[in-house]
Image 1 (tube, rainbow, N blue to C red):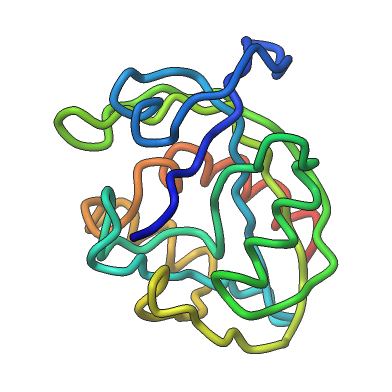
Image 2: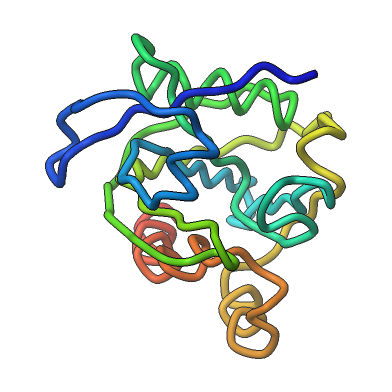
Length: 175
């Protein structure tokens, strides 16, 4: 049986105000710290992952390279690097580029209310997937993803759709 994980509860300025079991935080819609990583190859294509089908929410949906929550006492930078290794089996030089707040019902009874730290990085290293977390990966041009998000939005996670335009701004500066 998998050990219960906690998330760090934060205020609107990302100051820690407590901890809560992850599932309970999502049921109650409590704001908590999270991060999202966007890895590009040297051609500027984004590495997407397809979440494992049995994830408790958003299973089978395509999303950014990696996303998760830091542990209590762990910096967000350290957590981002740890989860990139654990989920995607890769290391990359990642940098924080912006933060955003969002609050959305992912599915009935599950609310993502996150203070999300967004990281970007560039590497041509290929992922080695953790099948408990990720079922597939692909690289996609940002222009093509923009069109896909409009044409078939239900294939993608809500948080990817929420922050995509801001990530696109950084992509334009990088490539």
